Length: 545
Image (tube, rainbow, N blue to C red; front, top):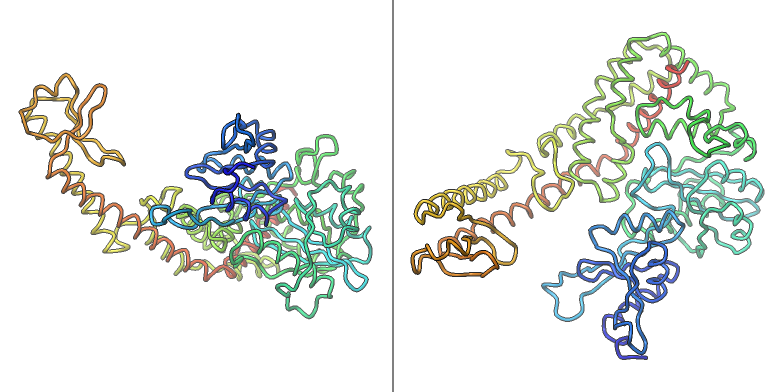
């Protein structure tokens, strides 16, 4: 084998890849994620990428290689995940500028069909399910990383497991035995084998050991793949399968409850008819209600009373309908906060949603039904948090959190000072450009900037001969222009760029501080999201009625 296989970089690659044999390893090299060997061959085939060789195609032992740009990797990863594969993201965890020799790399996240946080369907959950057999029962734990929702149940037989999974339709199933893997393979859902080990216990004595084991396996898998604190995971809802109408998989299919038997789409199903919900979380809840019809007469009556009252109050219902259309997906916004991926734009959407709550409560004031009263009382508008978000962020912040432009003037005196320094510097540059044009008589003279050379004065080659001798110091010669600097320009450049760099760093720190404050309210915000979702479903059912 050639020496290229034994370079420090390839040794690092082999060491990391050994821990993730069942995933494509996206290995960060500069501005690209690179794949090698069999990973490269398979991914190049799946995504129709060009397959090259790291050490040249004519080498004695060529190393197959393909890559995707770092900034565009999400689209490629989503395609692989939707085809049932896993991706291990291996990133640089040291600053290359501050590191001598090989940069340290680690897998920062494993993305799987059941844990994908992007490319989500608005009104559908993306469930990950763990199935464990314990003490003669089968524990089933399901979770949705994108919303933090989780639920537990147990059934007596493997046939019961299949019925439950046919309703849940998870994107990925975790099993702990080869026997279960074989039994569930016909469902055609990606299966993952997980070693059972001592993990995060559920802590609820009301659940049986099968449910506790299933939850432990589910939590461990989420934690091991996402590699972060899952603070947005909601307390698991424990339910008995027998609490709901037991529907055979074929019955669900033939009744076309949530999908058309002909097309497999929502359109043409009962869900397609009933779903006039205004929010994504309401749409997801309605789907869950249809998949699990109630048997409790008390709860059925509660729901019917609420729908009937909404039906009778036309104007209030229209007010609710119009307001709910403005509500963002609070459940997933809060999950992104806990997950650590929320942007300033997400937090502004959170504020906008909280500001709608008084309007929702106002529309419910005249309602007398027990359930609507409970929902209204539980809608906490989080006034202090909403005010903080309003003070902190501009109305339309950029998507990126590391390029500035997020924080509102007046929120931080230190930031305001830096931004003024940067703005004054740019005003000075504009004044300099005008004065130099006047002094030289060259109307096309301009002041420009690039990351390599900083600020410069650019004059076309044709006009360069008009410059007085020694006026500027030549910096760079281009095909059609000359670029120059002056000591004064270099001095201002240091001030402007210093202020810009400091302001961007400070903005990100301020953003993280606000996001951490929101993180402290995750549980109460999730309670609000559940109440809004239920209200949305009840309004939709009244509208259809």
